[in-house]
Length: 89
Image (cartoon, rainbow, N blue to C red):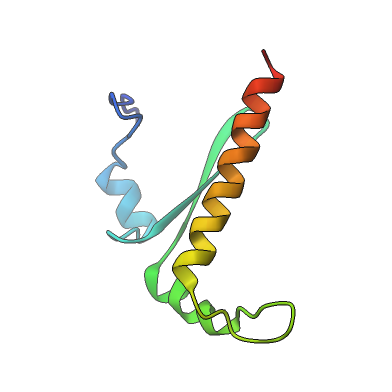
């Protein structure tokens, strides 16, 4: 199976693969690079939501603002990526 990367760097997951892996709209695609290859792991929405209550701050308090936690994680990762790009110049 082969797909073309679109102008917005998106690809379409073939129906056969989606069915084999049980991928549904709304699932989270977690990407990482291993040995020069893209590895994508899918996490279903119910599983992600079931883990929410398990997340606690260092003080043991439940995380009140999940969106803020996600936003901060994205900001931190963006900084890491940009720093890596700058270091390669």
